[in-house]
Length: 361
Image (cartoon, rainbow, N blue to C red; front, side, top):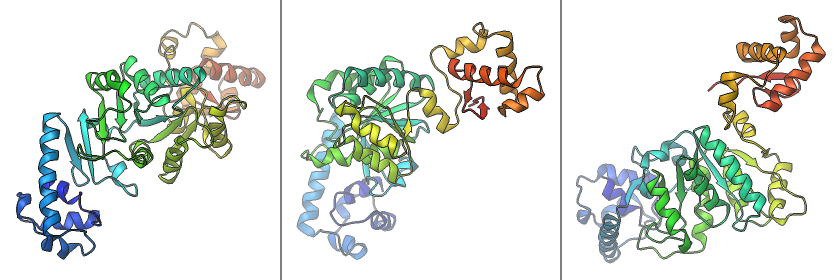
């Protein structure tokens, strides 16, 4: 059935529901037994006739040969390996071609990281810092393999022993940009994944790069935008993420920087202003882990006796107010308020001025 679905996905005008119906009723695994009249019986709008079907079958064989030679696999929208989060979006790909660890498609902690193709030093620094802590918190980085922030995020994931998914706007057999050949190899060597909705016989079209953005956001539970101008293609990904109901995070930047005009605009429009990984984890309800938090938690050497008392109370309750702490301690309310702010700054808790929160996974 998988091969039938794959072949049918190449026919213009045919819908997913019709493909599924044909595949379920077709009593053979031999695609050469398919006829155009049989397909038309289920899909009147399918642009197919006997001659076109014969050419399509020949093309299908060519695709299979090239992909086999390059160790490229594929999943269809009816396969178990196809991620539910992607299946639910409008215009979900009928087929995804892949190379690498296919299990990453269904990782629950995939997060998209995108931005300018010509980032500033600040943008590169922010990407590396945030990705490092995202990896430490078990996220898998999803991006588009383009130059700039995309490549920076993939590299940062690999450098921190994390996983990353590259969503190509070209067939997997065509590495673009060409100078990312080493990154391509590093992604696969590190256990990452490369995917595309385009087979090896397709000619790359400029529109493919904008279209792949829906896959980046579709695979991700949230989208982090590091740098983007007001006319940046990155904002297309943000719109997809918004339509898909995903978290949108944006790194603020210099108001004089063209590269930050888009991200600053997103923040004004309601995106989560992101200056540290804690801002992201707060939305997910995860307890933050940064490079030095683990060591702090084990020793508490940087906490005073009163700070330790309040920290342990917040940890016990999970979430509480300063008033509740006052009832259960011998500390004055003004001292408690000051200490809660200190604990927040030190990364032990989150405090919004009213509620203190200790995060547990």
